[in-house]
Length: 194
Image 1: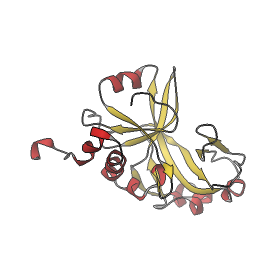
Image 2: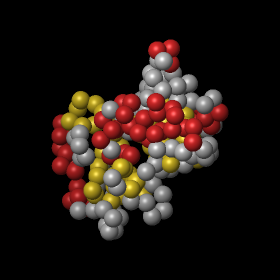
Image 3: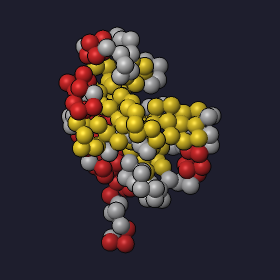
């Protein structure tokens, strides 16, 4: 699959050697002709949410730590949340795509306004960003696999327990893909050891 847009996942391929992205899964938050923006889903930090954003700590999905969203803007934070199935999107929540339960959460909004509607929340320090044409070039170089994200229980990609394990989420996402792509979930980190 080569089309990409908000709500899609980028899974790092073996050809991607940038240490910022080895074994990562990136959730695309925005993509267009001017570039793309996303967050790395599987890089937990040791920093508890409680230390940085105490008001949001009770809503954070386990593990309740900040995740390293990417190498850009690491002094800022982005939050991704999942609405309850019957929740009306509250102020401070922006769906990634029309009608999606997954979206960005405004960390400047009152926690109380969002607490009843959210069933999952993860906070990312920094983000992954690509300039115009940059992600297209990386896809052409086979650096990423572009796959649909899964947002149905019991496995919701941005909040899966595997996200706390750098290689675990990438393998889980690839394993569920059709055809040859599923085989990539079993590749060793060093193919020379195979």
